Length: 398
Image (cartoon, rainbow, N blue to C red; front, side, top):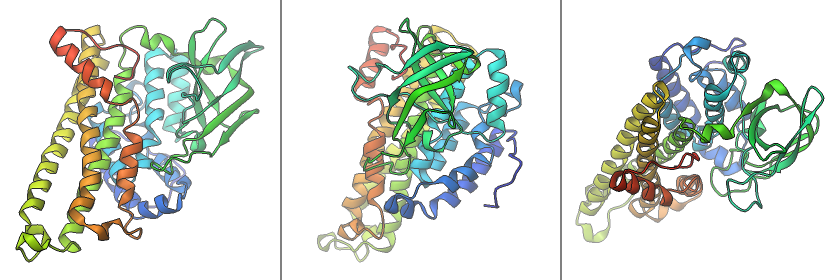
């Protein structure tokens, strides 16, 4: 890739977004193993990433962006995730916040925040909290103050906050209503802590954010709870990005398995073949994996098409159909990411476990990332939709 330009280009089309993503993915792949092994935080890579214009591809055309399809968005995220799944995950909540803005933001808020994104600004997140009754409960408080609000609380799993210019933060007001505050990362009283120690997705910087009487202007606070009190595409948009990340992880594990077996793995003595790539059991395993991977990629594309319809014509039925399509993509992407990452070692052999190859990162990344809004509940929603014509819940995790 060329050096970062001062002027952030505005990507104009789906085709351009995919072309840029492919070039960037090839660049990111080269040192992905080292970044994982050393937990080298990707500050430089993210500067390059956001300066390609890819972080602005979902800005609607009416506001100067490309307004790419969700098929393209998922493909871009999957391409980057196949190269480095941490770099694929970091913008997930950026795009999520932009969808909340599209659905619930005022015209003035859209004009201002979309412009920031097109100029290369990155949005992180401070949504989740530790120690609450459920993963959906929030205690971080938004209190009215002169000219705006004050925020107090502590967040965790704040992916992207460490690298962001703004941190969209879920907060609860005095009436128990949730809002999304787009807090500037240089605000007084805000402390982003790099205390993420997960064994996978090691460089996402998904640690803590502490708010100590942090001021946020009224214009930077957007309704959040209402996005889940009526049918909106916010939930399935979040979930399709998770599915894209898992699909990218699966693709990377599959391709590394192919390469290792072709060039390094020895045939098993009972296989009666001269090379490992002719072992009939190995051929069967790769055949099964390729079918499931291609199915995951196809369902991911299909779910993007359903989500496009839900964004264009938002009704209870279109949002439900999009949620179910995305849930199906997430289910199979979870399965194939875990399967590909594990089967890699079964087929490649003991040599593949050596630290110098870094192949264990695929399993670690798959195991950690697939815990997001776990698919075991999605199967129930999918079954209930088809069997009983029941729409899935609107809370955004299906």
